[in-house]
Every structure is written in C-alpha cells, then in structure tokens.
Length: 96
Picture 1: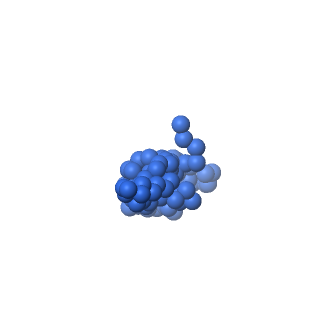
Picture 2: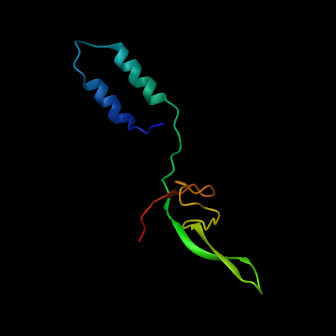
Picture 3: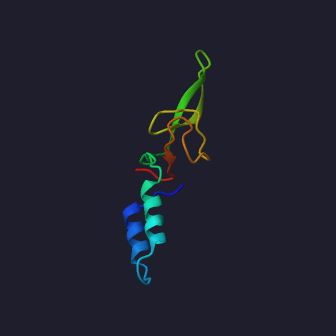
C-alpha cells in the first residue's frame, strides 16, 4: 500500500498533452477522487534498551541481560526484531 496525493496525481494526469476534450481522463480522475480513504498513522520509532533482570530471586540472585522496547517497555524483545510486537514501533539501530 502506498499513500498518494490525489490532487497532485489528477493535476499530473490532466497536464499530459492530448488533443481536445478527453472524457477518459476525466473518468480516471473521478475514480481516483472517489477511491476509498485509509487512516494512516505516523510511524513510531524506538530502539531496544538493554537492561538486567533477575531470573532466580534470593538467595541465589541470578541475573541476565535482556532487551525492552524504548516506547512501551515490552521486555521480551530480541535485537534482530525490526518492530516491537506489542506497540509496533520500528526499531532503530542507533539511538541517542
């Protein structure tokens, strides 16, 4: 799926040189203008944050390194995942 600027597309189609009045061009632009709209959401960007969590509590206190989403805190993430499975944020490799 790709988002387009409908008005710009119709202007482009209508600007193509042709001789006289072309009802097909008007029909195409009419179909484009009537096309179903979708609600697009902005892309959320995040990164995997490293943290230490306790696996076995006292008295043994065994810890492990883990990764969590910087946007929602989902903590079952893996560095190879390109998106957070909980909030859908796109995971960037570099962060500030």
